[in-house]
View 1 (cartoon, one colour):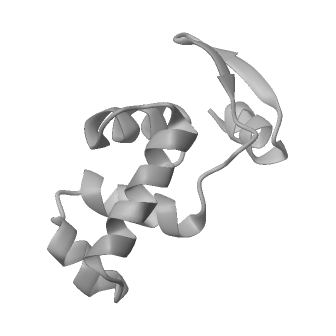
View 2: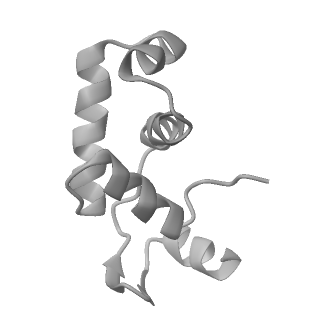
Length: 90
């Protein structure tokens, strides 16, 4: 896992069990935070209030996340982000 994180953060490409992944466009800190809050069960409204951003901003970030991860919805984004090592739960 640590090896994959180093590869991702260096902007290089790597192979994983689901096929070829291009990690040249990483998620921003804010995008990871929004996705992590979603993963933990927070609603859009709760994310807005927690991060002091508008509903539209949350949806814009989610749209960018989906595009960067090449997914179609929040569940797929969470799963793929977990596979890529974006969440560090200890």
